[in-house]
Length: 194
Ligand SMILES: [Zn+2]
Image (cartoon, rainbow, N blue to C red):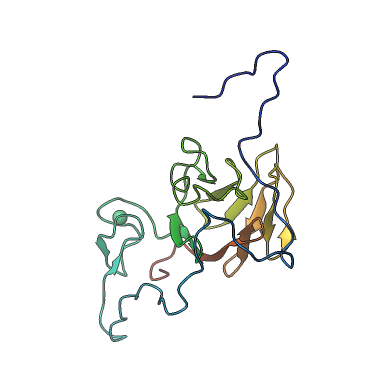
């Protein structure tokens, strides 16, 4: 780890996080921020559903191996269907996460290895911004670190308290700061639910 204590008399600089203005304020972008999303861009096409009376294998959310509707677990990686899908338009990011260790969202490359690259340069996102946990029963929870974040984490517009596990539901909007917004999809443990 690269964290080291500051020598006496030194003030540690907060890691480059910038405080974010409220939503209705400035819309100008600073250099280095990602450009506006292309309005003509289409979301990735989903595989067309087959006829209802034919058993069609769907790809595993984790390893993409085909999983028959009757199978509760992926024959390749043994994961159940239970997972959360987070889709963000800007930066363009799609995260799938299942039961087990929490998914860390932030700019710290060691703490949040799955998102640090996508948020590099997004100084309104904290290095340790939020964690998403999925339980085996399919319930999902979001939590900010105890220390909190500069620009906040919002669930359906309401800021969540640091250090408190807050339930996330299918169809929720999870927002980090003012601009980075994820659409939340929950996929349950039963067969044929995603
Ligand atoms: Zn799999």
